[in-house]
Length: 138
Image (cartoon, rainbow, N blue to C red; front, side, top):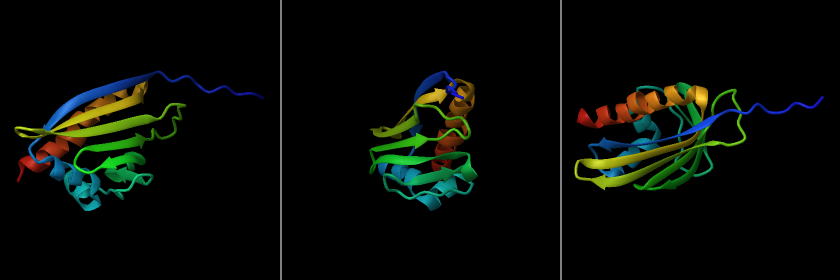
């Protein structure tokens, strides 16, 4: 019996967030396991080396580090649980100096259509939102 894969519609997301910290501080917050746990208030596993797998929010986000350029760029592949697509979802975070600290450019490609609203809400409220709050409390 031949089974053909299900075609899953995919979307892309791009947005800029202002974080009131330097690009160096934001990069370390995104790539240091203990700091990730501080700003997410949840368990994380993270080793800042390309090719390593990571998890955040007690496994809600799981993926693989592809590119890590200190204070500049993080590129990761994110997994979507049971849904397998032929095209991986790639998250690219670029950090740019900004007069208020850092402009964090987020691009995520190949998001399954049914996950798009949850993913974009997660970026706004949980991921970037939590990081913004973490630095505003200092």
